[in-house]
Length: 312
Image 1 (tube, helix red, strand yellow):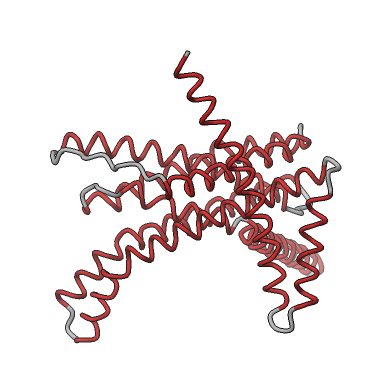
Image 2 (image 1 turned 30 degrees about the vertical axis):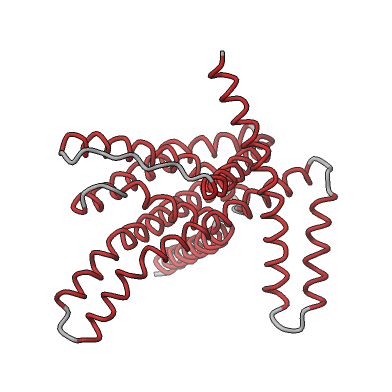
């Protein structure tokens, strides 16, 4: 009898340990999710453009193909690479983060540049062959973009984890990868089908309020998508600038980081209402301005390099 009780005590202890580990993984994943919020917004804002101009019936299948590629990017490629780097070359994480941050700044600056210098949209012939070819191109381009954003997410996640063992780190990364992918591409699916839902509500709604809401959705989706894209661009600059500022601080260049912290602290002291929010907004604004400056420098270098390559 005493042996059975001892066995039950051991089982209970193991159960409590497992529950504690799961709680720790959940808490770590939630913490990482907050730190990667800027990239998530941008990922959600960027993806809908890949289904623009394609048949409505193909929108959800395309989103699923991109999501499947995102799962592969995160779980099969990036997670093992991140764990290997963290185990054998942890010193590479900060430089990789800074490179990714510079890329985010470049992407944000490029979007702002194109908003002032828009390029004409290509016109595609209305036949299944062109649509099929275009769909393959769009999916491939989306998965490449997702790979870069996913690499940044996984690197930020890895640098934020405080797990006790390598297995806990891997589990947290896996939870983050799956949760973020479901969140992003679930949101994208809702966004790309919202206008179709609104049109159906406007045409076949039983109540007048339902039809009015449908018309409001149809009219409001273009402006809403533009707002999401704008927020995504700002988030890229803020996240990228913040990553670089903290990265160069680790190399001894602390002036910019101290300036950002000082201005944020002054705003918190000055504000009488919502001081925490205003302090964070000040930090994000300065980081975003710095990110825009970095992005413009990278953009100029890329343009000059491309022109030089074309001339040669």
